[in-house]
Image (cartoon, rainbow, N blue to C red; front, side, top):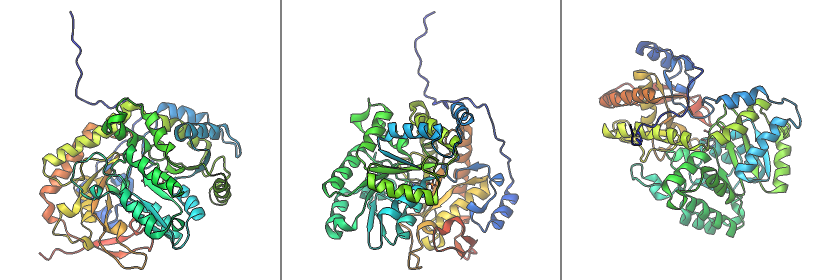
Length: 466
Ligand SMILES: Cc1ncc(COP(=O)(O)O)c(C=O)c1O
């Protein structure tokens, strides 16, 4: 019998599960109590009270058997551990940068970089700063300026690279502020705060040309470099036949350095690095690393963390894995769009973003519609997402408050953790909450810190007076 070849449309999870973690299915009354106890802040919920945890894709992934094998065989020497050299060699091969400075996570790399390059009065342009990046820039008294392309601000326009930087705005900024006040240009790939949208190779090249012509160092915030490379391969014609690692290497080749949270595309539960070419800056950064992180051959990580990253960086570049990952989120997006739910389109790399301001027009931005939506998802289905909106970005350095550019709820997917039935469950809950959306009310903050308030703030629901 001669069978003809058949290519199924189903994208199968490219792994078998050998180790499982039970989920406990809480009831709505227990979630109600848990949320109240947490000051209506999902960051303060015990994880055991969550059914599907989409708070973040950071450090929450499942590791492979190869990573665990490397971890068991790690070298925990304080100085010169072989685990460090394996980590360094992987990072060097993929990024091509000369100096690799390990850190315990991404924000530690940001802290070391910005304390060494930025000062009061400076401006750091980025497509969109992530919250910790912004906080580190502002902590130096500098300004974090977001210059994402105009298309990137349109939440529903279907375009392939909405994370691109507005190159004209970048040139205008350098012209008006002067090169001497811009110690670095940054580009976040993919653009987490801007809906997880990718940046094209053409745009990375464009930013690099502008940076080089003005002699301004150019850094990538490279947390999701592999996902960005996948989008370049699948959406930028010239790269359709280029391997993911070649795309990643070309991206890094346009920059002078990067900060990295290995908790994302390093496929690790912890870790990060700062990588750069400048010898003199690297010396200063290493001195600070010793002060704040640890000796330069471990920088706040255990040998086994460095082993996990050395292996994980390559696993993140695997095409079958990237296909499954990006497709899961797109699949959820298709279901929500079909139900009429306003989401950021096209769906991003690591997360799906619901446009809470559009979904809940009866809640004004200063009553935090995205906060209300994230809490609704938790109450109805035990799903924990995160507000990317006015609670996260609305507090100004002078203590005043203004609505953030957007009020979104991000549903971020841990790597290699959830399967299609989990995604189907999420879709069902979001669609049911949409049907009950008029019952959601605004929130007010009753306790907060001046920096990164969303992590610890306590809130209360505003009674419905309609
Ligand atoms: C774009 C981006 N930059 C920086 C960071 C900070 O990394 P970490 O959480 O490891 O400190 C994150 C974390 O979510 C991020 O998404």
